[in-house]
Amino acid sequence: MLLPKGGVSWKAARASLPPTRAIWVLLTRTRFLFLLALAGIILLLWRGIRSSASEMQSFYCWGPSKTPMEMTPNEQAAWTSHLRTPVIFNNHAPIEINSSSIQYVDLNPIKSTTRAVQNKERVLILTPLKDASSHLSKYFELLAKLTYPHDLIDLAFLVSDTTDDTLAVLSAELARLQKRPDNIPFRSAMIIEKDFDFKLSQDVNDRHGFEAQAPRRKALGRARNYLLATALKPEHSWVYWRDVDIVDCPEKVIEDFVAHDRDIIVPNIWFHRYENGRDIEGRFDYNSWVESRKARKLAASLPKDAILVEGYKKHYDTGRTYMALMGDWRENKDEEIELDGIGGVNILVKADVHRSGINFPCYAFENQAETEGFAKMAKRAGYGVYGLPNYVVWHVDTEEKGEK
Image (cartoon, rainbow, N blue to C red; front, side, top):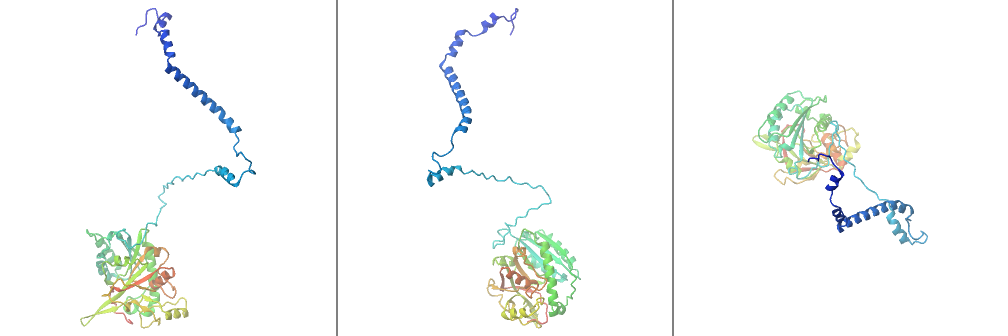
């Protein structure tokens, strides 16, 4: 835009303004006057409210129209009901812990149920070993046939006071098993070595002689406890104790035991002996028994550190009922009996039983030790201990002397 040569003058500026009549028409329009009046009213109301609020707070009487002496109980209750101080409960903001040295473990979801497979409940198989190299090949052959999902099973072994090649054979067998390309490998395997300086010949007469039983059971109790304390993890729902010298066992043994939903359950333990072409079914494990009045009376007369053992000609006369002398593998395998003592060849335990402190006493507990003491301790704590007289797991024939 070009300015006139003489610059900007008043006459030129006045000429560019709208005519006076146009401005007057705009100001006298009804819409404009209405908006102007409305804005003025709003401004006056706002200023009045602000200035009177503090005065009303100062001079208004917050109280009933009657004195407390003139009010009825109902009127007092109605008046004071609105005077209660409101309480607001604010949830705390979550705490975030950023520390690699702090671990959180929630055991609440870990259950032991009859739907173990469907719920993907983890099983821990524990086996204590001593001079067991000759049994390991058969042990892993049977273990590989277990039908419980292997990806839900953890294995753990404790090797103690061994004089043969148990550790090397065990390691080689585990390595071979875990390298298989099929569904046989297990979720994990652990080998623990711990010596207890317990020296005992593996000769049958020495190992299974009556005099050796009390110290042997104490040593076995310690071995089991070390194995359990090292291998049991928060995610385990079941603990399956399985001896190394089993020669035959149902492949569904874990599922069969789980279906009973018992705190502690054991099968019957027999053995095969072949003489002159005949298969003799021998009764092996006399550590699974039902208590008797005679045994209770005998225990009351013994020193507290004396340990009762069963299954030998030279033994205390306890009058107990032995599960080994009951049952038949041809009959109903789910038939149950309640037990007071158990053997250790095959035990399924709900993991929470062990977590509650029920372990294998390596001392005299109610005149019992190891697995029999474990059963006594569990019953003292209120847990159920059961046996399956018709469910037979076959043990190697030890040709023991003094067998019942």
